Amino acid sequence: MRPDDRDLPPRVTQALKAAGWSPRRRVDVADWEAKLAPEGFTMHTPARAFLTEFGGLAVPVSGPGRDYARIGVRLDPALCLGQKTWFDSLDAAGQLYPLGEEYDGHASLAMDAEGTIHMLFNSQIKRIGPGATGLSRLLEGEEAPAQE
Image (cartoon, rainbow, N blue to C red; front, side, top):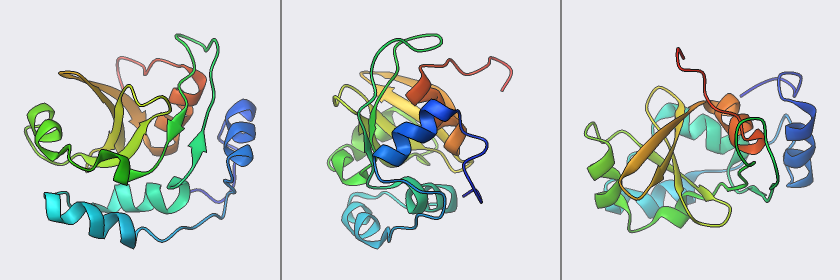
């Protein structure tokens, strides 16, 4: 949660605003939490904060990015219903909470208990970055620094 959009790149801010985001946006996450809890997903504080601000957005960006193609997102945790066993196979700690998926559905997005976004595809998990920074990296096609 941030007080404004000053720390987001202009192109990311523009894409998020076009999708319905604003710096003071707040959505109720109770429905997602209720749908996913029976599968064994437990919404942790960082996921709750992130989804409260960005949940429900569909951001269909594409084209060249900084390090790879820009990746659009659909931030709807219900898109990951039925994936708990797969999530657990990739995350031994079992702390990944679904955020949604890459816009075309080729990969799922999740957040760990420290607030870092991860992209899950096939048998791989890729660390993207913390919260809004991670979201920005996806939308900009930017690789996470190795030391982070």
